[in-house]
Each structure stands twice: as structure tokens, then as C-alpha cells.
Image (tube, rainbow, N blue to C red):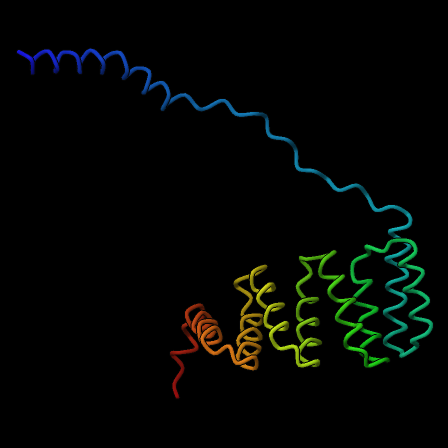
Length: 191
């Protein structure tokens, strides 16, 4: 008798609850209207002029006209100190003309902070850190690059090399194993 009452109660609950459950499963939840993706504003006249000055400075750097290139970079910095590649351009002169890797690292670090998605900055910064025998810093910079794009096999290879140079052998071995796992054709080559 007690079992029959429990069964009847369970059936009554099921009859009452099932429609609510089934409506909840078939009725899509109300969602807020999706906002349109933000469209960045067009560049200002100063931003466009700064980008043009940066292009001019780059051409002057290639001609080894360092003082003229620095003037163009300074003009660009006055217009837009956040211009992409501005600080890495200063770093190029620091390295090439002045052989001042320490100052280049400061400029590259600023560039990386302002434009964290520019992957080539990480490569140049890690090479500059290696030049100063800051192997642990170089490995850390490359780990940030790999975090940006874990499929970047070149970055993984550079990271493995930096870890080996820094004597971080277990981390280097793991990185190399990751490369091999992502590229099975490497291990399947005839000797």
C-alpha cells in the first residue's frame, strides 16, 4: 500500500512536471540581442601621417641614413607614440647603428606591450636577449609567442633551442616532443 502511494505520487509529480520540463527543452532561451561587432574608428590624420613617417624612416634605415631616420621616427612619435612598429624601429637603430642591445630590449619590450599580437616583435626581442646572454628571458619571451600561437612550429623550434641554451632540458624535451607530435612526418622519415 505504501509502495502504491509512492508510485501514484511519483506519477502525479511526473504528469505535473513533465510538461514544464519538455517546454523548457523545446523553448529556446530568450537571449539578449547581439550587439554588432565594434568597428574601429578610421585613423586620424595624425595616425596616417605617423604611419607615413614610419615608412619613410624604414626606407632611410635601409639606406643606413641613421640620423635622418631618427628624425622621421621622432616626428612620428610626436604624432602618435603608440604607432605600430615605432618602438621596434628605434630598436633596429639601437642594434644596427649603436650596437646597444640593452636599449633595444627596452624599446622592443615597449612595442610588445603596446602591440602584443605582433609576433615578429617576440622573435626580435628573444634574439636580442640571447645576444646579451639573457637566455632565461629569451625563453620566457618565446613562451609568450607560443602562447599566442601554439601551432607556430618555428616559434616552438626557437623555444626548444632557447630552453636548451638555458639548460632547461626537461622543458626543451617537452617542447621537442610537442613538435614531433604535431609533425609525425618528421619521425617517419627514413634514416
